[in-house]
Amino acid sequence: MDARESYEKIFSLMREHHNWFDSSIPLIASENVTSWAVREALICDFGHRYAEGWVGERVYAGTKYLDQVEIIAMELAKELFRVKFADVRPISGVVANMSVYAAFTKPGDVMMALPITKGGHISMGPLYGSEGNFIGGTAGAVRGLDVKYIAFDDENLNIDVEKTVKRIEQNKPKLIMLGGSVILFPQPVKEISEAAKTINAVVNYDAAHVAGLIAGGEFQDPLREGADCMTMSTHKTLPGPQHGMVVTNDEEKFELIKKANFPGLLSNHHLNAVAALAVALAEFLAFGREYASQIVRNARAFAEALHDKGFKVPGEKNGFTKSHQVLLDVDELGGGKKAEKLLEDANIIVNRNLLPWDPKRGRSFLDPGGIRMGVAEVTRLGMKEGEMEEIAEFIRKVLIAGDDPVKVSKQVSEFRRNFRHIHYAFETGREAYKYISLLST
Ligand SMILES: *Cc1c(COP(=O)(O)O)cnc(C)c1O
Image (cartoon, rainbow, N blue to C red; front, side, top):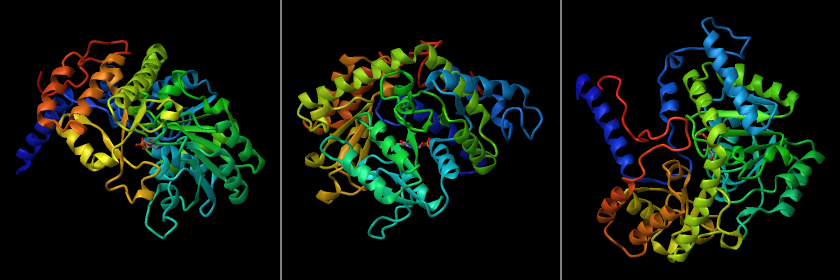
């Protein structure tokens, strides 16, 4: 391809992607779709600018409007998360976690987190596993932390408090990371924080997935349950741009976090994303409670429908889920890799995921036994409990009945026709996946 052909090709691929998502069921738990207002902020001139440092202490000129928007973003974040301090500069959830590592640890220190097999995120992982196997997690690989694991109760799909408290006393970590990427139920933040206080460990709750549910009053409230600070991505259940954030009520700790972010981790902090985040936070303040409440109702209805249709849905003992996520154990249906592919062919987008008991049955991340789904994005499209039952039926057709996925994909596209618009925003009725062109109208 010559330059012009490559150039044209990029645009046609982007359009194809938009069309595909416009006729698919997006169930990736870490994703969402933004309003047109957020998308407009993302393409503004802010994305060409620098504003290094903190508002009022910038080291560049030309920032007077950028500064005001960043202040609004911080004020909205504080109101939404009911906190005293917010740093809206981290450019992603991983960078927000790194700022906490830089603020409260030194290389070689012990940090505790959940292993990836039990819901921990790769950013909390060690460099090497217990058998010397390469893991390459950010905490180990980038900050040189010695990562010890929080104990997990596979049956309740939650942290094992008693064992974890013992491990805290033994390992004396400087930092404990709670939260996670697979998170069905509120974690015992209070109990872990009490144990952490006895050894002066800092507790951070990584709310990347559940930030919107926390802000909407539909999940636990980690800072009021004893966590010192909370990091997050701003684009999962919180339907903002891809960005990150740290919030806390502790002024001394906040000063350390600020310094970790600048000059430590950031030069440019993606000011277009800060503007887009401010817009998303304003939308969330107005519509977030209603949105978050529908998300958790949808997740519960989805899990129950899947269970009723014969799927193995982990977490039954505790009501399947209290978040936006639903897990399926598809070990006996050919495994997660196969399920992910079949569903993708049917225009149902999910990701394969390790289940806590996978290592014991010889499954690894390449072909795990589970799939993880989230309902935040379909809820944004206006779907309610009834539609969760319909989606569960599509999944049953593909994975249990063995219907041709291409045939099901046509039914999926038909189903999606009534759910193409953004809800829970000031400007609703906009097409969620419309390709917006600046070059042609
Ligand atoms: C998604 C996720 C992150 C990473 O977020 P990015 O914004 O992609 O950097 C961090 N922690 C947890 C628990 C996550 O699930």
